[in-house]
Amino acid sequence: MALQRLIAWYKAQTTLDKNGQIAPLNGLRAVFVFSVVFFHLWQQSWLTPSVQLGSAFISFDPYLRTGYLFVDAMLLLSGFLLFLPFARARENKRMLPGFEGFYGKRARRILPSYLLHLLVIFLVVALPEKRYATWWQAARDWLAHLTFTHPWFMFSNIQTPLNGALWTLGVEVQFYLLFPLLARVFMKMPLATWSLGTGVAFLFRAYAMTKAHTPMLLNQLPAFMDVYLNGFVLAMVFARVEKQTRDDGLSRVLMSAILLAGVMGLAVMIRHQASMRELPLVRISQMRLRFPQSVMTGLIMLGACFGVGGIRLLLGNRVAGFLGAISYQAYLWHQMFALQLKKWRIPPSVNENPHMVGERAWQLGYVLLTLALTLIVSALLTYFFEQPLARKKRLKK
Image 1: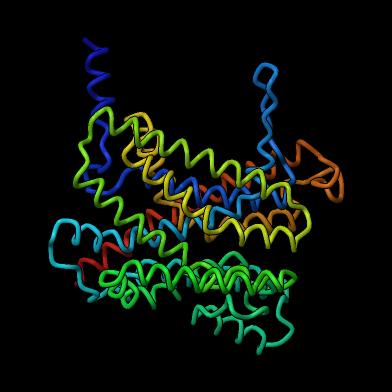
Image 2 (image 1 turned 30 degrees about the horizontal axis):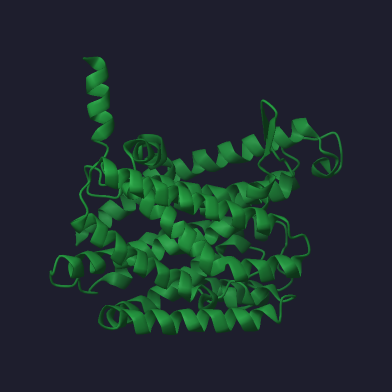
């Protein structure tokens, strides 16, 4: 009897949770964000875990070394979620959503935590450590970050005394400005819009490859247009599958196979990218992989949402939901903690450069402490700052 209930519960794992959200995407959002977090921790610690399974030796080095690739996955997910309401409306022949309040909603989601983060880094780190030679340098850095144009300039992107990982938010907000127009055009002319946007991305990256020594071109909005538009296409496919495909055993197995194909394809790309050692080659390879990587990631997202119940349970459980919920804060804060703890020599080490000599005790302690601090602070800010503020603003409307 208990076994029958367990089997029935397993089969009942659905794509949507009780709040109508796509449950497996919470887990995937956490995977994408924390892959970037682990990459930055690897950069500072050089800690590379491995496991021995019988005669097989499995190293996590390729995954950790290429964790930056998952920024693309985060942007694909963003494009998918933004366009999904339009894709669903079109598939169900409903009136298309409007754009009233779109910018206000995006601002309420992004700005409070972003501004708090900038202010803390400025007051706690940048000023005490005298990272700005003049007040003008500080003012122009703030101006670039407040206008989300900081990815455009060397002083506010790679050389900023604030947080270099924030370039992603600059790209994201720039895309928000284009989204209402882009969504309208895509709804009327999907193939032409996708072709034009993808062409722009390919041409921009082709130019950037000739300037591979200049990292500024790698992560500008035009270089991601095909990733965002592939998110639109994925939303249309998702809406079609959601409406017209029966959620039975055969369809779940088929979707699980699609997920497996995406994972295998992405694994091949990760291994290829990890084999690159010289920075110009790393950047060129990353740009070449950007389009196929977004396709493989899209297959993973689609398969995870409609695959067998075990996949939905793995990615849609409470732990995955918690990690997904705090992922924005984790992305904001992890780099600051990683850099400052190492600079402040917390935890202490025997060697001057413990990561270079493989001081294992320090590596483990440093990574675990940074990760724990990131999780704790992210949870506190999510549940006692970000979410209460969002609820308060919704009540005022």
